[in-house]
Amino acid sequence: MLKITPYLGILVLIVSIGGLWFPALGYFMLLIFAAIFLISPFRGRWFCGNLCPRGSLMDFWIGKLSKKEKIPKVFRSFWLRIPLFLLLMGFMTYRLLSVIGKLNTFDKIGLILVSMCLITTAIAVFLGSYFRPRAWCTFCPMGTAQRLLGGKKYPLQLDREKCIQCKKCDKVCPLQLEVHKGEPLPDCLKCGRCLEACPKAALRF
Ligand code: SF4
Ligand code: SF4
Ligand code: SF4
Picture 1 (cartoon, protein in one colour):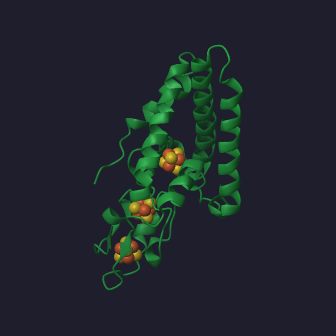
Picture 2 (cartoon, protein in one colour):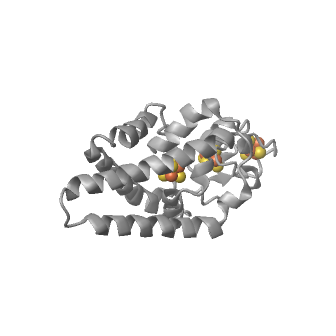
């Protein structure tokens, strides 16, 4: 299984900080969107657990500073996730439409993408420093989009015969999902950490 690496996190810093001087860097976000929309209909949130640069930043960098408090339940609520998704998409569309046809459209669009990356990363770092590093990922609009597009694909399966209910899987899950229950987990990031932690090899995709 492909594993997320610490080096991917550097890309977030390059885009969100370097992009303030070189707006063209913002177009890297389009590559991210394309990957998300190509992968998620087949693998759900696999991108989040294996390729997302911000996921890497949170796991390997912010994870070292984080107080790792429990992620509040409200972060998982669709009452928060859907309005946030619509708000972000609406705001992005509005900002993009307002610069199209103006002078320096290329740079202005780049800067809009950079600012989106910078603002969402700042929120993710703030939350991840206190709660578990992936707290932002519980309601990130791109994570919600992946869940909506492919939440049932490539599911994690629990072999109840083998499971001894030790809950080691729950402890390592970056989203604090209740893996031991064996229920469908549409927000699973397919990171495979629970599989590695399970002493009975009771989990598989
Ligand atoms: S939820 Fe968002 S920030 Fe987190 S890994 Fe997925 S796309 Fe990246
Ligand atoms: S770690 Fe394995 S054995 Fe333990 S609760 Fe999870 S699935 Fe069951
Ligand atoms: S359930 Fe397992 S594979 Fe899914 S996010 Fe949690 S640890 Fe990763």
